[in-house]
Amino acid sequence: MSKPQMLLKHEAFVKTAGYSTKEVLDTFNLPQKALDLLAPYWIYVGSGFSDLPFTIYSVLMADYVGYGSMIPQKLSHEMSLKMAERAEEMGVQIEYRQQVDKILVKKGKAYGVRTARGDEIYADYVISSAYPNKVYTSMIEPLTEVPEGATKMVNGRRLSLTAFSVILILDKPAEELNIKDYSIFRGDTMDTDVLYDNLAGLGPYRYLTCICHNYGNPGVTPEGTCSFSVTVLPRVDGWKTVAAEDYDRVKHEVAKQLIDDMSEYFGVNLLDHVLECVIETPMTIAHYTGAWNGCIYGYAHTMEDHIVARLQTAEAERFIEGLEFAGAHAISGDGMGPAVTNGRKAAKNVLDDIAAKEAKR
Ligand SMILES: Cc1cc2nc3c(=O)[nH]c(=O)nc-3n(C[C@H](O)[C@H](O)[C@H](O)COP(=O)(O)OP(=O)(O)OC[C@H]3O[C@@H](n4cnc5c(N)ncnc54)[C@H](O)[C@@H]3O)c2cc1C
Image (cartoon, rainbow, N blue to C red; front, side, top):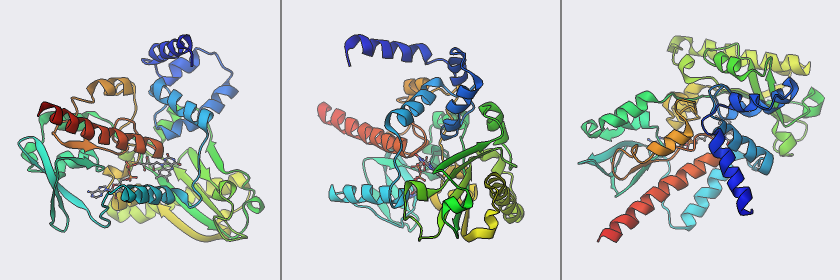
């Protein structure tokens, strides 16, 4: 890229950095139809356009439009396995089926972890994929080592979205059930602020995202069948109100709404074709991954917690020496690509720290 072009891009970035997605899109006076086409991916960053920093939206769209998307043949788990394989080739030791219970800290510095089985593993650095909310409220040992700033940071940030999915294996090929695309977004409006408000409760939900794997990945299910999933991405707060005794009822009500909505859309009663059905709720996610409140998107990108401001405070937010964070709750936010970026950033912080200490010797 020539220098003037680079300057122009940098200038455009700086000019738009303080504005919401809505404010920038409004300047183009685009017809509503065009705006509706630019909106569907909002759900992958999880804030309505009037509160979503344009910086985040533009990076998301540039990524999709410029590079497209990828579907691993053996689903996303294949990516994890490949990364684990490569890490092991490079000398990493992976301990499966281990849960870290405590992060050990002395005089402001992390020095290892204690597992749920009671083993202590000592290290100069700890990188946590557990949310800061969990780390600073129950994992740091002793808790008196949690600095006040860390508690304030956790309380000041707003958690983003969780997920509710119904994954179906159906007894006919997709085209026979009128399922014609890999990816379907269904909403009765494309006003993302209205849709964001709708995600606060327990449904009925107004914005559904569906995937039929067979279109991107033929052969993913046995011949004559297909896989179809319907997902909504609610805010975590609504699901915190579900009492244990109501959980089964709420889970089945929401799942039924999603299946019925898509059945109406296709003109086919999907329930007549179900071979297998798995329902994943925010509680499932919290239970299996330990994600705080089942949140899958980390902290919401908002105008008051803007990525550009976060860059300014990133250093000050390294509250305990030797403790780094990698996960959707880290600076780059949610998604599988950003998960890698967040991990790389945490590793770089560690390597920079080692280099700085060696340089002082
Ligand atoms: C249905 C669904 C569809 C999605 N689709 C896409 C998509 O198409 N593209 C995309 O980019 N993103 C997608 N996402 C989002 C993406 O999966 C998440 O943003 C991302 O996985 C978050 O990464 P993470 O590292 O924060 O959390 P995770 O992927 O949950 O990883 C955290 C890991 O840390 C482990 N862990 C936590 N606490 C401890 C502890 N104390 N001790 C030991 N281990 C611990 C957990 O077991 C887990 O393995 C989707 C999410 C869902 C739910």
